[in-house]
Every structure is written in C-alpha cells, then in structure tokens.
Length: 316
Ligand code: ADP
Image: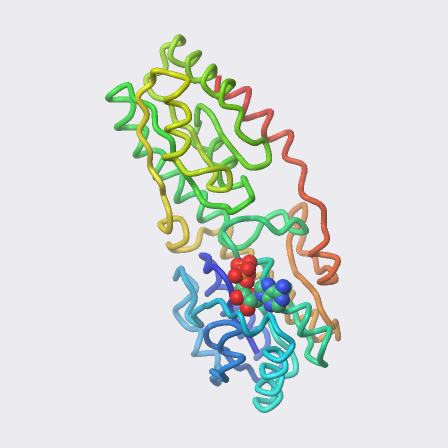
C-alpha cells in the first residue's frame, strides 16, 4: 500500500511512481490509498498498476491526494485502519509525508504487524535525519524566481521588501533562498529576530548605496506584516511586503527532487523486501540511507552555522 499524507510537496508523484514500479518489478501487488490516513480509516483503497503512475513524474501535488486525519491519532482510528489494510491484503505500507505522518506510521508499525517505510515528502526540510526532503529543492527554486522578479521592481524604485516564505518552524527555505537569491538579510526561527541589528544592517545597506533591500523572512518567526510594523517603529524605511504562500507548494519537481524521489522509492521497497519493520529513507552526504523510524525521528537538528556565516558575509 502507498499513501501521501500531510502537506503536499513537488516530487510526491515521482515518488509514488518509483514505489509502484519498484514493487511491481519485484513481483508485488500494489494498492493506492487515497487521502492519506483518512483514506485508510474510511477504506478508500484502489488497485494500482504500472499504468496508474504513467505520465505523473513531472506533476506537482499528489495524484493520491492528501489530507489530515484526527481519527488516526487515536488507537481506535488506527485499529480501523489496520482492519481495512488487512481486508485489502496489504501487509506493508509506504508513507510519503512529513514528521506528523512519520509519527502516525511509527505507531501503526508498533501496534500491528504492518511493515512501514517512510519517504520524507515536505517542502519544509524539517526532518533532521535527512539532508533534504522531497520538494524542498523545487520550493526554493520557486522562491528564487519570485525573489528575482521582486528585486527587479524594488531596485527600480529604490525600495525594500520583506518576502515571507514557508517552512513552519524550520528556517531552511528562508536561509537557502537568502543565499541563492542574494538577499540583504534573513530572519529565521533558529536565529530569532534581533530587531535593532536588522534595522542597523538595512541602514548600512542604504549607506552603501544598495538600490534594493530584500529581507527573507521565515513564517516561523512572524508574518511579513508584523515585521514591517516592528521595523517601522525603529527605522524610517519604507517597506513593502510579499507573502509567497502556497505558490511554493506547487509546480513541476526539479531534477534534484525527481532523482531523490526515484532513489527514495527504490530504497523504500528494498527495505521492505529485506524485512525491515519500520524505516525512514533519506539522503546524507549524497548517499541514500535507511534509518530505524524511531531513531530517524529523534535525530538532532543539522548545524547551519556555516550557512548562516556565508549568508552574513555575502549580504553586506
Ligand atoms: P506532516 O506529515 O506534513 O507533518 P501533519 O503533522 O498534519 O503533517 O500529519 C499528517 C497526519 O499524520 C495527521 O493528520 C494525522 O493523521 C497523522 N499524525 C500526525 N501526528 C500523529 C501522531 N502523533 N500520532 C498518530 N498520527 C499522527
């Protein structure tokens, strides 16, 4: 069985294709579960064939659809899901989603005889055991395109703009976009907001004759409007705001995400064939890895100090 759960991300379809084709290649029968754990509880399970995943590698979103499901957080909800899985003849499940979805999969594996393999699918890059999650690269490229366009108009008018990006409590989308987009400042949950330092940095930029100021703001800190109001209290700069929102979640996956999807999909099925009970596949130092699911969820956060330093040096 295969499902996508939580927030959608570009590359989920490419992963669905990779999982399905690898399973069929190895002689398994595949079922698609619609709308994540909700479809497990309400029994929305369909047969999947090689042709079910034709012509989807390039599509954003997820053909299996995704949803959030409160019932699955209870033992009773998971019991219902288990009964539906057994009735459909499913004994192994591939879950593509974020940390919430991984937690659900860990509980299902712990309470039942279902084997699970999790694939990290979220634009937020907030799963610590893997260097990259599926969809992150595409989302950052979408942000970069937007920043390019915003910069054109801001520099024509000598204006400054706060660009709010997604990421929940993880600042990676903001940090990577700030470096890639040549931003003048970045504000992330990891570093927090130092209003006086930010104001001083923007003022310094003005003195150096910068024609535009782009401030990359992570949604996990505050909204663009709130930062604008806070900065207005300590500077006389005129600031514009842009909240990119769901534009970051859609779009055709980048090559990097398609490659990850293909490699994650093959690894997930190979782990299940090897008899693993509960794993999370990921990538570390360009190598595909499979960690015990509980261990993966307990991984410490990546050290971003080098990237913050690079950003700090180059934005001056
Ligand atoms: P994401 O997977 O993107 O982090 P959510 O946190 O919304 O998204 O989780 C997706 C779904 O996973 C939830 O709607 C719920 O069904 C299930 N889930 C999340 N947390 C748990 C948990 N602690 N126990 C069981 N199921 C969970």
